[in-house]
Image (cartoon, helix red, strand yellow):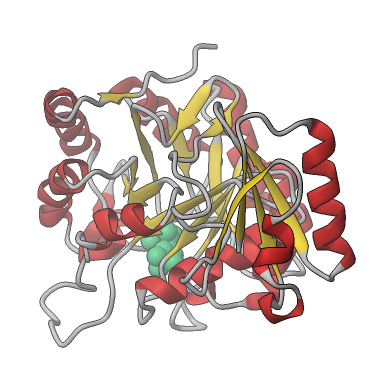
Length: 343
Ligand code: PEP
Ligand code: MN
């Protein structure tokens, strides 16, 4: 449930409500907005009648949260969450384009790509070091060496680095190097990993599972937030349907749906969402029109030579022209493309 405090509530009123809730076995999450304070209380509501809390000094009302996810819900927090990463803000007016190869392949490749996508207008660098591949015989990523190369690319360009963590065991090393830790579609319901992500300081990009409903996706985000990390970015990356011309069916309706249900930023990955580079630019434009806070796009200097996902990777030339189009579309929606860091 949500305890909405009166405008006039004192610090002491707030403290007493929190103490009471916690003594009844609830975990509490304080949200201090510009005009009022809201206390989210997670636990068994039958243990404490709402009325008992409503009678406490400084309390305006007690509202049950009807959705199974609580902390990530729009009911819990009306305003959009913004995530600050140095000078970059995700979830505000700025739209971020995160670009780079599917996988880090070599020093030369990742540094050249980082410089090129930055020059084209990307604000963050993506690149997989630990790759979740369907076949055990496919390239599995450069692993720890890949993380070190991403860090070198960041040094060169100042672009923050987004990379995937596949399991609990590698989380400490991945979060040491990454600026944002990505949870892949295949791990969206790896609950132990989600709980552990709640304990790190870095923001998390949570991809939607390929067979997950929006509610399951938000519940996965709830695991991370309930474990202590509120800096979560949702990423729609396509779901499995009967259609097999595309690799996945990019569910762009999930963007406004998730934004209605949740206060978290939502980005879109049109590369995995379609599996075909020809569809990436149109779906990127549509994602921005649908209200996405950013895009995660695979770019390769030479897609035909890519060690993974070449067919869905944009060339630098196509990526550059896409950014030009997005810069025109964004202002129509009262948004703007974010500016990259300056080194
Ligand atoms: C990726 O972004 O590198 C990736 C593997 O994507 P997904 O988890 O969406 O398949
Ligand atoms: Mn990929």
